[in-house]
Image (cartoon, rainbow, N blue to C red):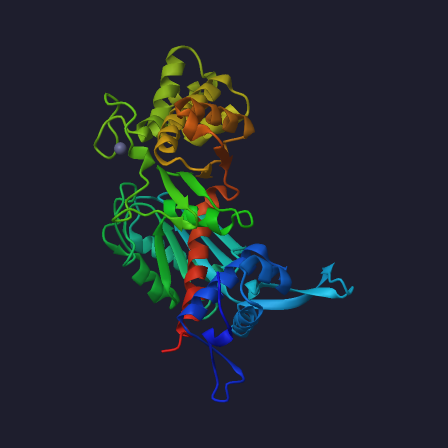
Amino acid sequence: MNATSESIFRTNSSGQAFTPTVNYLGAVNALAVMEIIRILGPISRADLARRSQFKPAALTGLVRYLIEEGLVIEGSERRPVTSSGRPARLLRVNSGSRTVLGIDIEPDHLRIAVADLSGAILNYRQTVCDRQQDPEATFRLIDSLSREMGIKPGSIVGVGVSCAGFLDEQNGVLLGSTNLPKWQNVPVRQNLENLFGVPVQVGRSIHQAAWAEHWFRDKTEYGKVLTVTLRTGVGFALLDNGTVYQGHDHYDGELGHTLIDINGSLCECGRRGCLETFLSPASITRRVKTLVEKGKAGGLKPLLAAGLEIDPELVYRMARDGDVDCLSIVNDLIHYLGFGIGNLVNLLNPSSVVLCGAIEIVNEELLETLRTEIQKQCLPQSWRGLTVRLSKHAERSALLGAAVRATQYYVNSVVQSDIAA
Ligand SMILES: [Zn+2]
């Protein structure tokens, strides 16, 4: 990054006073400085200069601009102190100045969060949904939940939405979803813009989860990160040095529909042997029945005898509590997940794999099992140096990603609106 002088900013007619108006290069640089402050802040101006490599005059102008726009604040801190012994004045994102709303529409759950400009969640609601309900019922639910949360017109500056299915991201229209049968050509963005009166950004859950990993990355950590999202389906997204790969029509990442067995069971997509047929609730019920027929899985036998559907979460819980038969089922699922992820690692050679979504069941022991299964499928060159870890955000990954994309959109629009004509 380089900026030659403060001339990237417009000055008033006397050429002296700063006005909050930038040219295109100034806008790009202001966003770059904002990002460094967000990731490394609180940070002193000296450190910021060292990290950004902007020349002092340019940096002074950029910081002043961000402060005047209310996006950054500078305050006295107890530590670190300067060499003169005075408290250092540190820059940080003015996170409390605005809030955004994140909404995660899953077939069986609706999650809503109010987040500040740093991405911290201030208020959160989660509720169970009926996947058979029509979209209008979901929008009414969003309306009532947001009222309960105290969201009023003008209290948020943007909304970010995460949803699964076939999405026209450009227009924010959910074209269809195998798990939401009544959602056909639903104008999600339009409905929510009518409801909240602010810009709405809509994205697929796998991409939003990847954005959350990027936003909350560890300091300046960059790399080629494969995020694998376990939700109603299984998807992935590739983060490549700060951008999320998206296919021609955004329909990438369908890990659950990669072929594992050409003679396998029929998948919801209409083909046979997809990875999801090995991980789906129906396949878990099938495994339980097989075990019961062999006189095993005694803890689940009463449920089957009563004709009840086996809830996968029950199997996970029992596995975690030490039920050997349930643990064998979970290990079987991890075995197949390892196939799917191992194939991807061989194809894409990422630096790390991060598991997002419904991962509460994956404790350190199971994570180690997954690492072993992935390694078995990897070429040695692809496996070398690969880290496999759990996301810190688990089931909130896509929700957080949606919220931070609303924040990004807001910050970009503030700065770009100041670009001189
Ligand atoms: Zn399929």
